[in-house]
Structure formats: C-alpha cells, structure tokens
Length: 104
Image (tube, rainbow, N blue to C red; front, top):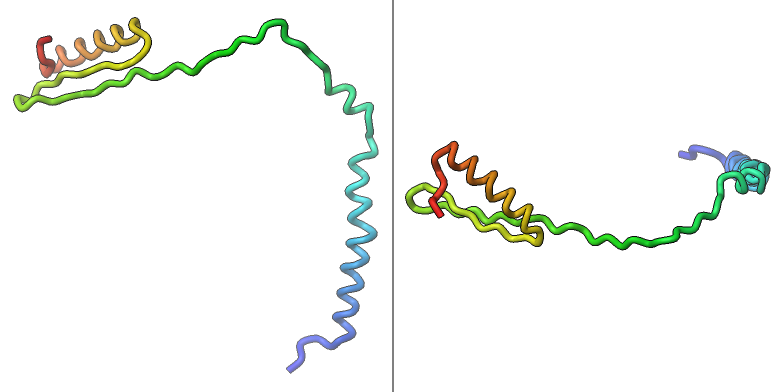
C-alpha cells in the first residue's frame, strides 16, 4: 500500500528548497538593516576610578545540642564576633522563654 507517489515527494522537496534558499535568508538579513546607528546609541564606554573587591560573608554556624535531660546548648562558629554575640543573645532569650536552655 503506497501512501504517496514519487511525484508528490519531488514537490515537497522543491518547496522545502525554495523556503530554505529564498525566504529564510531574507528573514535573517532584515534584522541587520537598522545597522550601526542603533548600536552606537546603546553602547557607552565607562571607566571606574576605583575597583572594590568584596569577599562574600560567611554565615555563622549554629551547632545545637540536646542533653539527656531535654535541655539545649549550642556552639556558634563564624568570623563576625558582633554577629555571634547577637545570635547568642537571641538564642538565650528564646530558650529562656521556653525554659529549655542550659545555664552556661
């Protein structure tokens, strides 16, 4: 059982070739027609007087421990002492309100 004969395959092939070599190049070249005037408007060269190199801030690590009595203690590790003290104070307040912190 034949679906299409040989003549219709040639027609389809011819149409595909026509589209490929005639229409597609016209579509790709039409985007280039506005040229350098548009590119010159959008590009401006800027120089920085000073380059600042920033390193990412490492987070403070909290190691939470639970004792056999059900109370909690923790270890704080990090680079910023002020942040470690702030976090420690917040943890103490939170645990004091819940009644679960160990006395250090």
